[in-house]
Length: 144
Image (cartoon, rainbow, N blue to C red; front, side, top):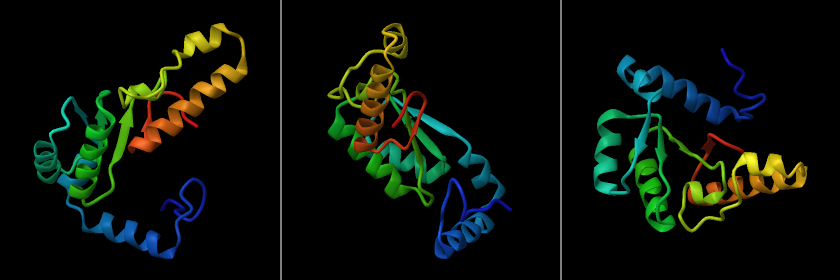
């Protein structure tokens, strides 16, 4: 069994119990659906809620959209999901990878071409903070 109390989880007894009980209660179909990450081009909360309730996907990835609409959609899918979902985004050039209003910093190659570690740090910091503010908890690019 995985050590849920140690790195990187640091769960207390109650949360460890929830993980074990939840895993034991899942059907094989539900376990299989947990490894699927839905790619969404819509923020239609009714459609997304129905999709998550029907299929129980473990993750969702949104393309950049209006921050308030994206955040509302993320809140709806998290509420509809029995198990908290992984929410991913491409944040490689700033917070605008999840929210159109996010800060554009420049891609990793731009930071690397500057030969300035501070630029890379700032890119990761912006990506992490702005992605997290919308609800992203899994990035495919730098994070803070």
